[in-house]
Image (cartoon, rainbow, N blue to C red; front, top):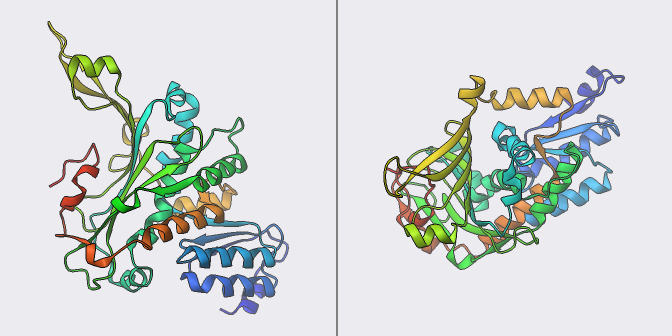
Length: 360
C-alpha cells in the first residue's frame, strides 16, 4: 500500500498512532513520507522498533532530522520495558525501605545480565556483521534495565517525570575500565570479526551512584537464558570480622526465568552457636498473581491503544545507548576475541557469573 492510499483509507477525524518496524537506514525516509503525505498530525505518536540507528553519529543525525520536521512524539519500542519487573523496580523503590539503601554508601556493585541460550538467527547475521557486535543490538535492552534503578525518584511518578529521570540517568552513564572489557565469539559463528559476547563496566557519574561499578554482561550461545539485575550490598564490618568471607546481601530483579524480585541474605542456623546459612525472601508473579507477562506484542499494542507510554524509551535514551556501544566498539579487536563452545560460558568471564545461575 502506498502512502497516498494509506492516507485515503484513514479517517481524518480519528486520532492515529504510527508503529514502524524497519531497518535503521529506512526510518528517515519513512518518517519524511508520512509527514509529506499528511499522515502525521501534531498529536500523532510514533512508535519505532529499535535500533533507530547503528551508531551514535547516525542517531544524532536522525534526531536532528526529526527536529527539522518538528516531530517530538517519537517512542522507542524496547521489549525489555514491557517486562513487569522493569516497571516494578520503580514501584519497589517507592514502597520499601530499600530506597534509602540504594546509593553509593551502601551498594558495592550492580550487575546487569542479558544472556541468551539461542545463537544468532541466520537472518540477523548480516545486521550484526554490519555493526560488528551483538552488543549494538542489545545495548538498549541493557539500559532499559539499568535506568529505573539509577534514576532519582520524582515526587510524582507520572510518565513524563519518569522519562526525564531515565534520560538523566542514561546520560550520566560512562564506560570505565574499558581495557578490561571481554569480547567473545562462539565457535561456528560465520564471520570472524563479529563478537557474540561482551562483558564491560559502566559507572553512573552522579552523586548518588558515583564510584559504584555497574558490570554488564550480554551474549548468545550460552548455557541457558538469564536476564536480570543484581544489586550487591556492602557487607557489614562486624559480619566480616566474625564470619569471614561470606556472600554479600543481594537484591535481584529477575526478568527470566521465574520473573520476580528476590533478596538474598544470611540467617543463623537453628541450635547452639552462630553459624550463618543462606536464605532468601522472594516474590514471583507466578506465585502471587498465578500468571506471568502478557506476550510482548500484545502488551505493546494494548499500551499504544490505551495511550500508556510508560513502557517506551525516548530517543535520548536510545542515542546514549548507541554512544556507549560506540565507545566500547572502538577498542574492540577481533584478534583478542575469547572463543567459547556453544552452550558454555567463556572461561575468561568466570568472575562475571550471575549469582543465581549454576552454569553447565
